[in-house]
Image (cartoon, rainbow, N blue to C red):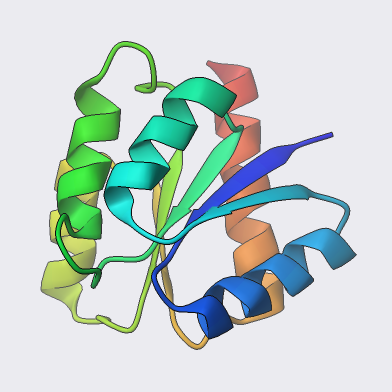
Amino acid sequence: MTDILIIDDSPTQAANQRRILEKSGFNVITEIDAILGIATAKSKMPDIILMDIVMPGMNGFQATRKLSKDPITQNIPVILVSTKNQKIDRVWGARQGAKAYIAKPVNANELITAIKKCLDQTIAN
């Protein structure tokens, strides 16, 4: 079963994403901030990480950069999921190592498509 880690400080947003993912057959782990999320990523080694950007303390861009630079987690695809939806946010996210970018509110089909694409790319590499 595919494990997906959601890192989002909004319980409502995390619950919405969890519902979509579990309905599609994914196993879901959640964390409420980037520091806990990075620790969980290292210990659980999920197949995909869904990362919010606007969080207290370390933001999602910083966390994505840390994950993509760490030899332990660098091969885990990160999909940024955020209300920030400007072109510059998408570009900056990609520069930090994100493999995809989904705008909130999350569209279930768009989310599942992005996850499957990232998984396919991971398997191909």
